[in-house]
Length: 475
Image (cartoon, rainbow, N blue to C red; front, side):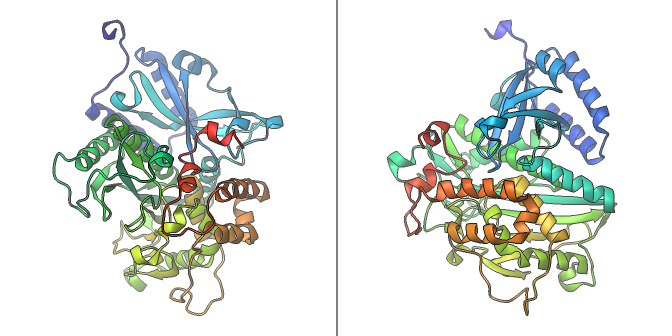
């Protein structure tokens, strides 16, 4: 059969060159119409492409993918409709028609051995019936916000995320948790320790190769503190690219693990008694080529502008905690016995603080929001962090950066904080806020209210990144 097909399958080095070129176009803000013309011509001329995989995310951050025949997409790219009522957190059935608009800047050539031969990937923007951005599409909300800040102030919002995960034995380990009641490690070496050729090291090597080919610009990778835990780091990008890369990171890690007969899990705390997984979110703001967070004479060598950003995050920390930690399981991670960032303070050294100020220089100066779980919607997180840090208010609390205040230790308190906060209404609108709360409550009410010391089956089974449509349709 292979002799009869001639689908696109490029070497990794060639993939990296193509993806880095596309990433550079994005960073230089090449006009959308120019990119559209270039991409459509490429799709038309490249006969070995059979399909275009269009990606978008629902309100909880679950990645959805639709494959369009290449020839159909080239003719109909401006009228790709889908049923929004089938997407949790999107439209009601009576107003279900939504459309996808191609973001041609977010175009990726993917490794054929993990995505399939003859395919390219592109992120889509969800459009409502009136032709405007759909309010439930957090990617569109984030992109619009970032563009407005660039237009008004010449700001570029930068982000880099450190995404931790676990590698577990067997396929679909999360979906099968109700059968086994446990997760099985593939490695117990711990921080930085994994021998060449063992399953965890092999997985990390393969995942890093795939990310490099996708233009991530890798920096370092290693096993993390907990057994069978990993982290693969890459360079910072503009905020929408960074959020897209989080979705790709998790998707590609899952694909690599699956090809090995294993499961890559981004549950925040799948195993009690060891460190959980976080998604430390490093952010900065630049104007032109100047990093506005850097000040060699400032406290901890960051600027007054950066400290005001920090103070606003801490002030609204309780309000946005549900966005940063969106699942029942996430509140197991906010446990002070395991370096958990559950304190509403800022510190250069205390890893229990919600916000940390890493050592930096003129290029790398940034702040790190540590209280973010890897199962959070990346677009919602980065929008909340930047809009809060730039447009939020500073609470009138003595010693704000060091006063002992804590994030909630359960999802019900987090939901109440989110519901009652005026700031979250300003962030998301009443409609989106209510939809998000309904989704979170639906999961929480099916789980034990008190976390206890055992990971309960429902907190895995009803997790937004694990659930299957059949299960939810029973309710």
